[in-house]
Image 1 (cartoon, rainbow, N blue to C red):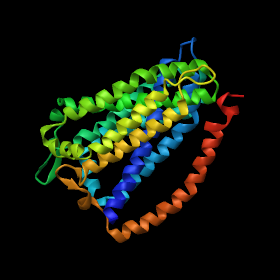
Image 2 (spheres, rainbow, N blue to C red; image 1 turned 90 degrees about the horizontal axis):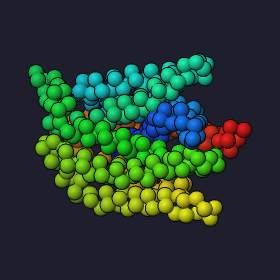
Image 3 (cartoon, helix red, strand yellow; image 1 turned 45 degrees about the vertical axis):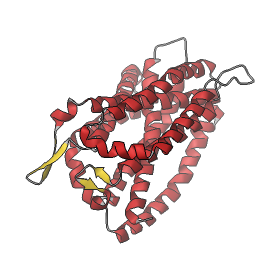
Image 4 (cartoon, one colour; image 1 turned 90 degrees about the vertical axis):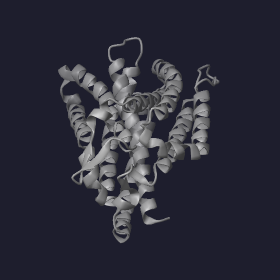
Length: 341
């Protein structure tokens, strides 16, 4: 594999991991807000119990992803920083506010409701801002004036593809988080929260798929190149739909204890679904980072420098992976924590 292809594969893998973790993190914040004052279900407690230790991990992967973009594609940073300044800056501002509130949540009891609301709303606004980056890369919104890149905000804000991308990002976030929290509630033996999240997963699944298909139909005319590539990769997108149907079907399987839904298998299938879809979309997006002004090769670092950085990354992940495994066992598998014993 060529150095540039390997670099973009690693970068896309980090994006996939952050997309899944971000969906769980921000989605849990939203569900925690929605059910914060509902005494008929413990869904809020389950969501906040998951959210409490995991938002730091999500931020770690965001930092790794940003550093990887700058390290692997240094010649792309000038263009990307110019055209993505507003959505990224607003997203980081909201993320800073959310993180600050999360840090002080356990030390400011009388402001807990405000913190819950802040976590819930930023759980929708931050993904919306981050997803708004995708239509910018499709073409038609960026041009050079006096050799300086300019993003046409007027055209972007009035184009339906922006809002369909945002709708896709939000429905995907809520669907993935609902399925995962369903499994999390199952681990905690919390039937009330389990049935609440299962109910939301059942209606959000088809909605997320429908919105994804409709989003492609709103691509700007300049994005005909990626539509053709998506059609060429139809087999992978079809395989993604198959895994969705498998995962969605597991929501209805009746278990021996009388409950409906095989949560763990549903989570695995849905993650595989989005993993295949993300890599298929990434393949369709090649060779461009931003069409038609920036390709992967144009922004890539020197190959020798890349391989040196790859060694450093390998050492870093060699240290981080055992820490992540320990974190998983302490907060996502330990029944004493799950049940707050």
